[in-house]
Amino acid sequence: MRPLSPIPRRLARRLTHLAGLALASLLAASAAAQAAATPLVPLTVGLSVRPSVADGGVWLLAQELGLWTAAGLQVRTVEFEGAGLLVPQVAAGKIDIGLPSPETILSATAAGQSGLGLTFFYNAVPANAMEFAVLADSPIHQVSDLKGRKIGVGALTWGNIPSTRAILRDAGVAAGNYAIVPVGVLGAGFHALTSGRVDALNYNAGWHDILELSGTPLRRIRMPGVFGEMSVNAFVTRSDALARDPDRYARFGQAYTQALLACQADIERCVTLYWQANPQARPAAGADADKALADAKEVVRRRLQRILLHPDGSPREPGRFDVAVIRQYVQRMAEAGEFASADVPVETLFSNALVPAFSRPLVRLPGPRAQARP
Image (cartoon, rainbow, N blue to C red; front, side, top):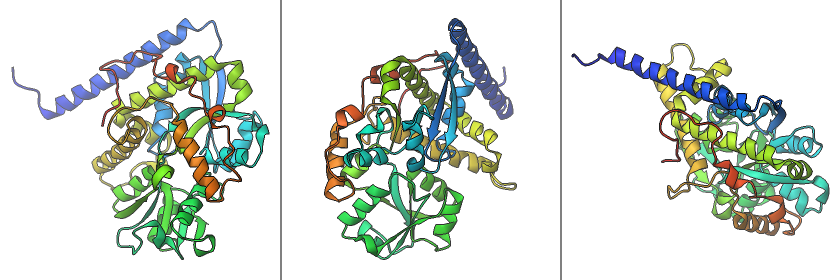
């Protein structure tokens, strides 16, 4: 028998992929049918920034594979421009779960605002992916070189801005010796940097990956010390709601974790789902489609690696907070004058109580079990 030619091989791989997705959907539907006697619970999740190709596919893949349904949930996402706008909506109970930077809530708690009644229950981005990025030929090589410079952020409501100020202060750059400029997100901010409107961007590493892989060489400046180890995004909800129905949030965390692992196992599907839902993000007409897909897959791969693996390559436990790091971070922010005090009940504000549930799969997906891998 002659070996298959390259075209049939590609077709066979595609058919295998489609069969796998069909089986996954069937298994998810079966799991959902077992719980059909109980109506799906509506759950509104607020995002502090608009998803990009780096992270948007995870939500869509969870929907396609029926993970929310298997968890007994009907999940809807709503986008906000920064944690400063999102957090009050969660505190008021208008949004069930928020995904902000913890800084806004930590700052309010340190200032004595004890009535927020919020608890972080899932560490979504366990290490600080925020960084400074400058053009590769820029004279800026370290944080202290940002003196007298303009630093672009998405919006002045972004929750990470206080730690950015603290990092600059630690580097000897006083508050009056730099400007934080709102430039919008992604393309708008990229243009602000390449056109010289700002000297640096203070975005997450995934967004900088997008710019760099599109052909703009960058120099990255990482967040130093405990600032770089701090959680940058975490799921938060009202403490009374969490106490009243912890299983609801455990099931949400299970489904989200499995979506991350499913995306890691099929990054291409994550990318194509995002492009289908956001056609404006597709490669432009005439662009090299294969390169665009490869670049997008690399952006997603890097983000998942930062979330699922420690820097040494060992797997993280999904959703777990490093409470010791958070305590150190609060102390450093208080010393920098960004928090009113270090008197923050970190152990009650950040809960690991549901972490053991997050790694238990809701649906048995086809093929080898997805695992965190470099």
